[in-house]
Length: 135
Ligand SMILES: [Zn+2]
Image (cartoon, rainbow, N blue to C red; front, top):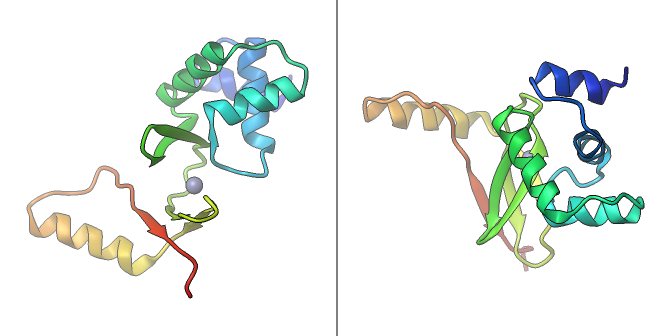
């Protein structure tokens, strides 16, 4: 059994060809953050006959099952990345669209302190910096 099959079963999902193919694409992608359209195009390049609606449906199922995370880096476009349990924040270059991942222990710590000052504890957070190359 392939590792994709095992992962799908572990997530409580039935093993279907579109699910296996899409999981493979997310795992082998050079770009870790892919839109449904990116995934769809890659499937087409591989000669797979999977419609865009199926890609959306499978990605949403993956999100519900905790296999992927959905981010909204740009208005209207969602990108997906495999949920590997490692928390990180994102920086988006407004010129090239490049996505840079980073972790800063001081930012992480401050966020907890700020939530606590307001009487809360953090369940989850998402921090996106929109940047431009320095002149
Ligand atoms: Zn990321």
